[in-house]
Structures are given as C-alpha cells and as structure tokens.
Length: 97
Image (cartoon, rainbow, N blue to C red; front, side):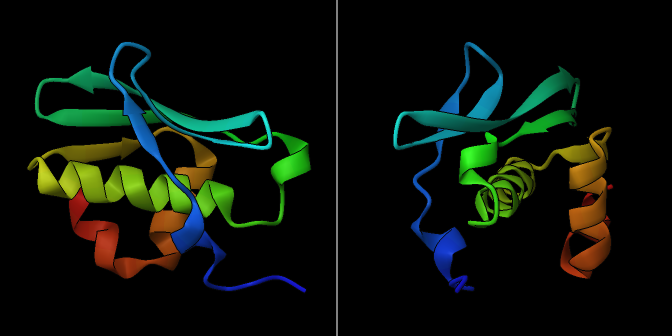
C-alpha cells in the first residue's frame, strides 16, 4: 500500500556542481537536472531508478525543484514531460512557467 505522505520523507539535496536536485535511497540515486538560463531554470530530466518507483520520489524531486525556483524568483521551463505533467496537476505552480 502506498503512503500518500511518503514524498515528505525524501531527503533532497542540491548538487550545484552537477546542476541537479538529488536523493539517495538504499544506494539508489534519483534526481532532477536543470540548466540555468538567466533568471530561468530549464528542468530537463527527472530520473528515478525503477527500484524506487511508486514511492513518490519523482514527485518529491519536482516539488522541491519548483519550490526552489519560487524561493529564488526564477521562472521554469518544464522541458521534462514529468515536470510538465506535475505542473499541470498542481495549478499552484503554473505561475512559474
């Protein structure tokens, strides 16, 4: 059974050198990568290993990345389809696009 609050338990760090937000669970790393274009962040890939699938890891990563953009007055280009889908399902982030 899936825990709807599981996304809050994901520990996410900002790896500025690799330009990504990442989390490691059981020696498996999931991440969302970005490119900086002035005051815009292009979220280009969300990668979650299959073994971590279904735990809300991807959604937690995207939420973290979008909250980061908002906190730093950045706009977002959701180049990754997962990010785009997340924004469509969460209208509170539409203003970032």
